[in-house]
Length: 102
Image 1 (cartoon, rainbow, N blue to C red):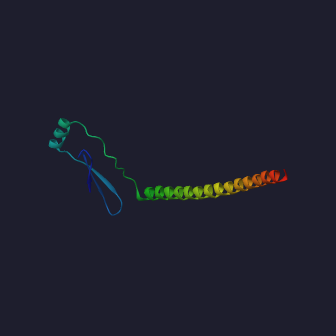
Image 2: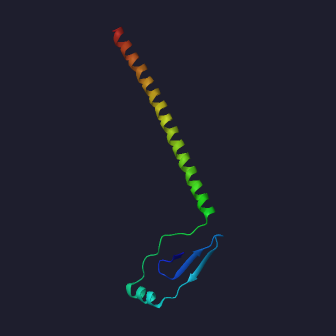
Image 3: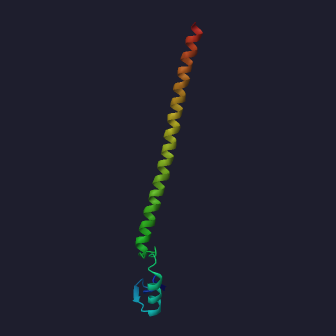
C-alpha cells in the first residue's frame, strides 16, 4: 500500500497483480498544501513486472554488446599498433642499411 506524493491517492496491489487506486479526501492536507504551495511531482513510475523484465533484459543485452565492442576495439588497436611497429622497424632497417653502405 502506498500513498501518492500529494496524499491524494492510495495505491494497493493484490496478490493477483491488480492495482486499485483510491482517491483520498483529506481537507486538512489539502489546506496545508494550498498554503505551502504545490510541491514537485514524485519520480516514481509504476510498470508491470513483465515490462520491467523486458527493459532490464534489453539493458543487459546492450551492456554485453558494449563490452564486446570495447574488446573488439582493443584488439583492433593492438593489431594496428603491431603493424605500425613493424613498419617502423622496417623503415629503421632501411635507414640503417643506407648508412652502412656509405
